[in-house]
Length: 390
Length: 117
View 1 (tube, each protein chain N blue to C red):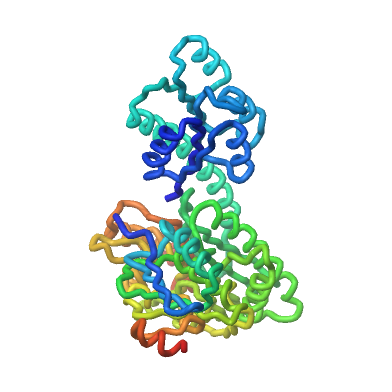
View 2: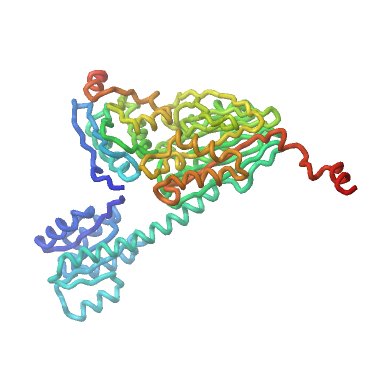
């Protein structure tokens, strides 16, 4: 939880200390003895709320409030006036300058605290709504609008971004006819910050693939390139990400991948489901991390399922995370359904503690059709038509 | 889900080494707290950190990210971050992200202290 910071401006030391003590239990409190000191503290750090006395030496509460209103970065801070002057005149003056609350001394400190709580709660709701809106916008840009269409294969995609969720990314590109690069990743962290870093990271991956493709089409080499860029760029210092990069060549029925600490994919067929085990370290940690390519041969009827940690970290009814073991079961049960991801999601949520996902969730299902699927369905057969017609 | 202990207990071992007790969880709720705690230690000259995961049931990617930040901070100073008494849930995360390649693991805090001397 974010801790709110308050600025208390009061010249009377006993009351100042009392407020500092009581409010300090719940909030980060800084105190000033007059308006001049308060303005100096505002230069250091912008508080979430200001409580100010009216009558003070050097600079009084009204002058402080006016100064706060004049500054672009402070004018939106909730402002509560405390005053000993119970007379109507100063109250009117206070209301005129647009304060959020006006409390007359002597006052009940519990009432003051509940007003502070209420004002901060309101600020928090505004912030959360704004974050969610921007977060949704980022998420939309971080996931594709279309899926590759390749004969002999089907693809399914599922993505539920949450405003407060993490930084999941997914992208695909046909680098030359018949060769596809599929990127799935997760930038560590939560909320808008993670989304923002994910957005920058997304650009890194695209440009790295684009620049390096002339020289190599090895996913491991490309992942190493992204890692180098991340580690060497000081603006991305706090960015750590898992990344799974797949090179898919449908004509050869092969997928070659490098996995930088991402959730391990599941390979499923009618014979069962298994984890695609090989992986290397996450990105952004060490400059000389090494990555290795691994190839998977896609047999008819087999499917590769990739996902983000929102799936594996979904909390089940017994408070345990789903984990790889849980995902294997769910994938196995979903295999063979016309909409396998829908079946997967249903399977997960049926066993979940909460009826929806706790975090961002992204799943990609890539399936090679069996040769049966590619045969012309019987009811299209002209011979049969003729036979039936005669 | 209620996790009461959000603070991290710091036990100095020597001038440049400290043990951080991780407690029940290191996740998005207290990762910032972990960062503040460890950054203060780094400012005071600590470069070698032993993270004690004995009681840890939850380590999510935000929490892990905060450990990574610490690693990025101390490794240019030739400092180390090691894991001690790693619980099963933490082991799962460490395996999945392949970070055992960077963070040495010790069975106990004592073994970690011996190993880092």
